[in-house]
Amino acid sequence: MAGENHESGGVSVTAPADTDDLEDRIEAQREEFTDLLEDVRSRVVQVKRETDDKAPADHEHESYAPREDVADFQNDLEELERRLETGFDNYEEIVEQLLDRIEVLEDRSTILAKTVAAIRDRPDGERGRNAVDRLQRRANRQGIRTATCENCDSSVDLALLNVPECPHCESPIADVVGDSSLFGSDRLVIGDPDESAPPEPTDGEGPSRPEPTDQKDSTTDERR
Image 1 (cartoon, rainbow, N blue to C red):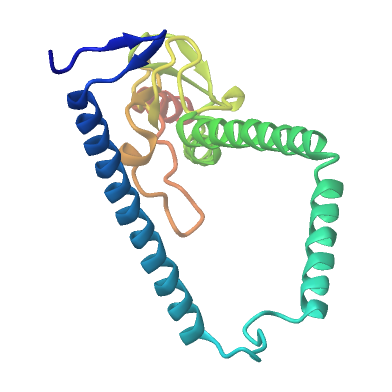
Image 2: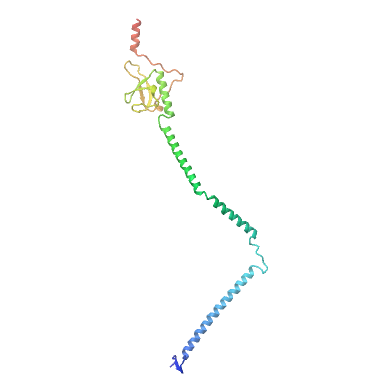
């Protein structure tokens, strides 16, 4: 039968059908190998042609940097690396110093801001001192030493004021007004010192404090 193996004297004999199949496979592999070989050969030829077109056989590589320049560049690079390594040896120390300085500046800025706000808002700033001086001058012109706060009815010694406010109720004092009656009392007007204070006399002499009427009458009677 075709395709079967027959033994003759201990030797295996391949059937003709198997031999044909083996020959076909060998032929197919030969053709594939030939195609691959041709492809490689054509690529080698192409590469050679491109290489020949780029430069002649006796060409020189002028586009490359001279060796001296390369050596100089290498030296510069090494020097730069050395300087960087040396400069960063105390990197942490420098950063700590900068952070300390920043912290000090922040503290000073905070203190300055608080001081400015305090001077602007507190009544004992320059504006407050000017108001106290104005009140004391007006009281001196009218012969007033003490006056009654119209807010808390407490007696205030104007000569002892250092801020334009009542020392008892802390109300802002705008002006001092004298009382001409016999049993009345001088009073402190409560309000904004800058807005409520009347203008001061410019001739250097303030209005004299009027004497009570009863005192004038008694003096006249004594003279009579």
